[in-house]
Length: 281
Image (cartoon, rainbow, N blue to C red; front, side, top):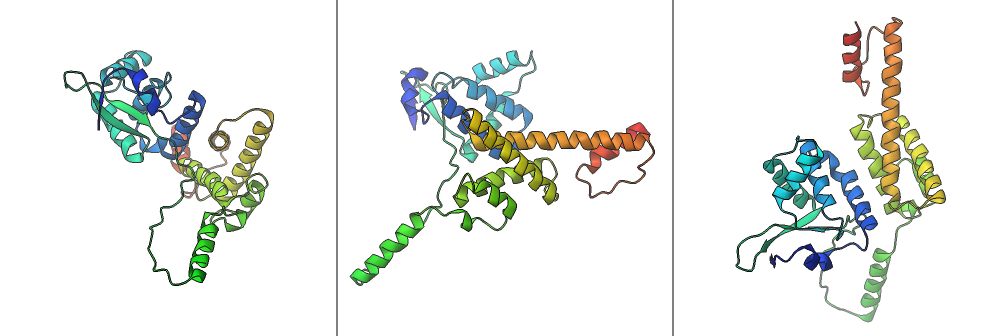
């Protein structure tokens, strides 16, 4: 599909967002779910492209050269290549973050691309294939209607997946009753644990997740939080970072006092701690 090039204002009706705050909240969710799939250079390109959508949230038709020039200025001459920016575009398209359309001038020549950002489908229902069954009786039709009604009904916390720890379910259900939301919060927990190399430390992850969720709830009671689940993820990752530096500090003290000679390879930060030990000795 091609659009006639006429400036961003002519495309503002294509925006899927009612405000800039709503758009930013959805970008945060996209990043929570897929940030690790982009390189640092690709993320720089993505974040600069997002800033070009500030006037009409989620819609942008800036030229690639314009975006690259802005990145170059932002980083004091340390920009990214055109190929890096294009790799970012292909990844974002594949992940469903935005769609890209070609625009053309009045003379038919190609102009800048049009980027239309999509909403983050947090609770998108599974696609169910329709099957046409022969109608046999009124009783069959009634049963079918009852089944449809049950499928459309929201599942409460008792249907939460067994992979979510019970203490976490018991806490979250006090504020969110549906199983899908509870599972989404734990999904963010699992992502944070993976990025911090703590996916095997179940008790530590559970303790941090419960503390982080409580902090998020307290924040929502005092102030308006546009995206609670993104805020929760931010609190949790910060707590994991703080724990990481606490462990490094304690390990350094133990080394200086001669209390550590051997370090278990099962430790989540084994490589970092080993490097510190080798540097200090």
